Image (cartoon, rainbow over all chains, first blue to last red; front, side, top):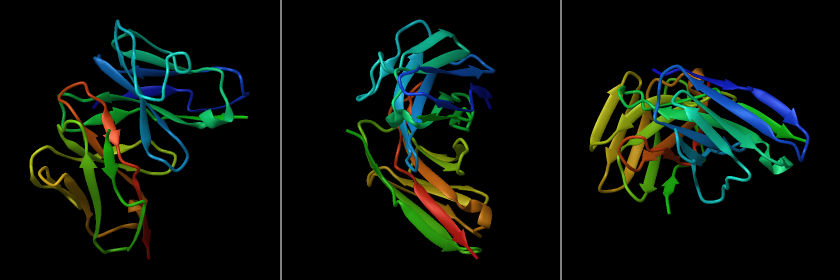
Length: 115
Length: 111
């Protein structure tokens, strides 16, 4: 299975600031997916990141608020911009394991608290 | 839109069997996944169904009926460590497609 290193694992940020979350995969993957998991809730897809093109955002999420970079096939970043307390959540990246039975692998998550 | 429904919470007794149901209505279907998530941790893969029928993996089994838009996860010989959230997720298309998740079922295993 792919191994994903996600940083930071947690952070406490002031409102109005921005935080960039990084995911590094130990193998090349075409797509990376970014999710948000609000307290006590399930995972909501933010966007799909394809190397060399702009990310595709789901309804309710916009590039100005959640800019994504995908500079190569093993790395992606998600920035949470101009944060407010409503952005307090866990953010996870994920990749699809096309050649295994394991489905999708997730990063360990970034627990963000905005104060 | 995408609609994936599962019960919010369930409680079961150690050593018993529990069935967690999931119904889905999605624009496209290319497989249904079950994940386990302990509090504060990332989801971990449990099972995958793309054809109708039952898939068994040790204490865990998953069933799919595509015509009914229905799946269930069966956990046997429950252990305290099975207390977790169980997430039902649908892949809508083949290859390089994100999962769409249900709201998750929080299972509490009691002695």
